[in-house]
Image (cartoon, rainbow, N blue to C red; front, top):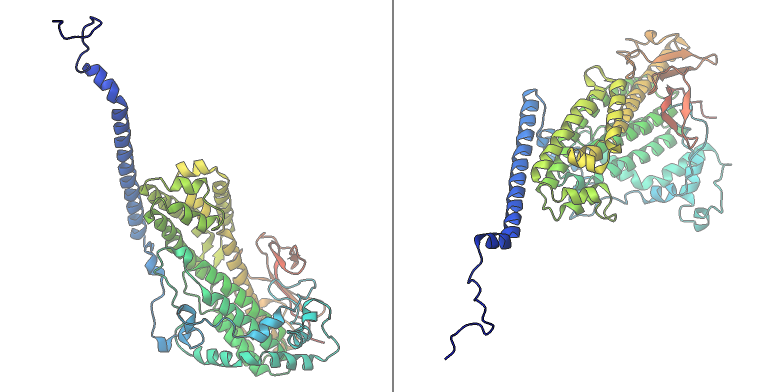
Length: 531
């Protein structure tokens, strides 16, 4: 019998390998396990470090008296029966189960599509040419005329201004019930719109009231112009009063765009005041001077910027931190690149980082805000610090020019995205405050002219008889520039954003109709009397 064994006579192989062979066969698993443990340790450490740095930063800021809790900027709730925003016309704006009042002025909206801008050289930084009532009257009459919409017909210019003003008021008659309702509601002591401040993602908060308020102000401006043309000064005064009231109802909202809409509303009110300057009574002029003197756009801008830091900036970063990694690219692209653009490389990178990196983004964002943005406004002295603003623009510009990878590794992606458009609102706040001050002085100058037969040689003659206190230029802290012209009129101006006295010359905008904010002076000149 042959013994068992391999037929080739060789020795049998071992039942198992040596330790070295076993280790080599498992080495990839151990390497992968080590890498996984290293990643876990890295994520845990970065999560802890990021949160610790954010909590330490918040503690230091709160110890200095800074408000870091976003809810601290939310206006307190008020009773509905004392709230202007809860009048029947406005309440449905935030009750999304009910139709919002979007089409409350169909006649005006149809006519507005036919009205063409009045061209002409701008000599006033806030006030344009008089409202073209003939154009508007024609537009109301032809709003349903397809030929007119195609530009086949031209606006009639052979009618009188009185006829045109009557046509405008007739065209606006459908807005009267709403305006009467709001005028009555303006007597309520509070105005608070029920924005959904509790939104998890602040960037999707709806603001339907802003368009409605701007729309109402445009209608009131046109009404006031027509009423002035017809000699209905008291009716026009009531409408301008309501315009000034509407420009303040969003004052306490911690939202930058709310302040920008307020500034646009103020410009419309200044236009109406300027058009009726030679027709307002003495009490009406004093009311305008006092009311315009109470606008504090610098203080409002500083408070809103502080809210922007906590409510929107930190709020958006924190929302992205809480979101799942898979959903972050879509959220990121929807906020910054547009919903149809698809996620960019920054969005993809931010989808895989430790949550602690978002805390580091918050720290760097807030530090940039504290170091560069907030110093641009000196609310206590109602000034804008242009040196600080230039520093902020340079620093933020350097951020936006940095590569995405550099920003990613230095935890400054959100700073570059969220701070890129901050300097514009500061400049607009300065222009709006100067407009309110110039409007108040214009009313005081008109009062002085009526009392003494001519405009004064200097602004010193106005206080305290015609205005309680002379406002200063928010740019340089000095009195606004003023001189009486040879034709008996005057020019009143700020040195403007370039800090240079250009002699009261307005820098025209690119379209030739608006003004350039960063060049030339910010100028108020009296409007020529209507012929």
